[in-house]
Image (cartoon, each protein chain N blue to C red):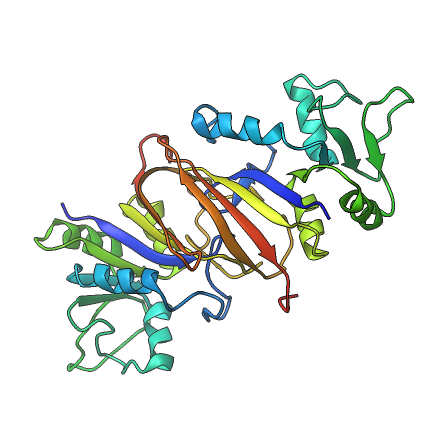
Length: 181
Length: 181
């Protein structure tokens, strides 16, 4: 079964963005960014919440289009609507069943783009398989947490760590749900 | 001037303990723990808040005694009182002036033991010089944050990273306060 991989930039104090979704303060240039772009090429499917998708509008994304042209998009939202020409799938019901079906299909691992609320929802249901954090050398003080409002405790297994010259460090973990619900 | 170094175990989601101060889930054995004990030998002075000091009582610490025998202890609390035979200094006023005086004295770097609330208070006043986190492979979901209720944004400079076989990773950062208050 293919894995769901949450690949995300995070501050030392566990924030993936400021409260309003802005990300100033994260390092956007450098080898860690190049590596991230390389990883993205390996995913054929992306999952994200509505706010994460709409965040793209301010950065040139056209409503209904793909943020990542080579990936099949599934946007999880009860309110989002597009006309028949949309390139993305909107999932407005049976979210867990849809995610489980996607995991069972053939294909690459699945990119979980965010945001925190949606990632926390998946964590609560044991559906985040790996976390890849680009740990940025900054403390925000407040913002959107890595797993939103989730309070689930899980153990992790560190698979990979890679420090970059600019102070970002990449950490890849398997999520272990056994007995920790 | 000597540095104040906040040397602390933390979860991936930025918690240094559960809400009640307990720390089950953190890895206590292994090379990362040996290295921590080695680092402690290099400090001659320790700062901590009252709750962190009292947490030691459940682990064999006698009230008024030193938690780390070779260090001069400064416990920050408006309420704590010991009789004349106490081995520790209680700081119940002029906290910032006391900390600044300690930094100006001769000696080793100063160990900031915690907890989150006290570390956040020092961060708010630009007095945490380095952060050494033992990043544990676990997500707690809730607990006491690294900098308590502080909402101060600061940049960091990664000085050192070291992954251990058990999945803990040591990260040492300089704290950069310039223009980020």
